[in-house]
Image (cartoon, rainbow, N blue to C red; front, side, top):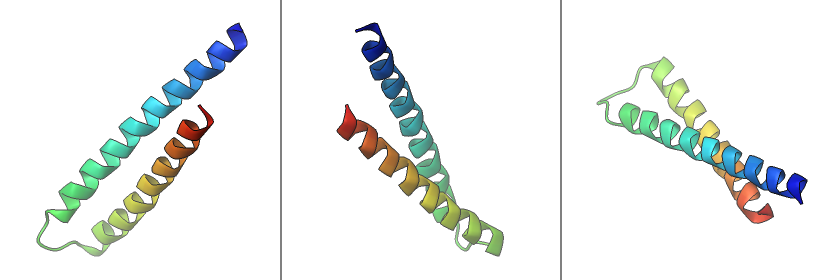
Length: 67
């Protein structure tokens, strides 16, 4: 029973971390999107942020389904 509670707590902590990461990525994307134009390095960063944000969202969905 203790092991099961620990695993559930671990999932909850990971879910909280992923949620915070997702929010931070979304915030940075908004910041970049507010620019009139993006430099080539900002365009690359924006693309990478989109992928990371999607990956975090997918991992959150998997954790929520297995809860």
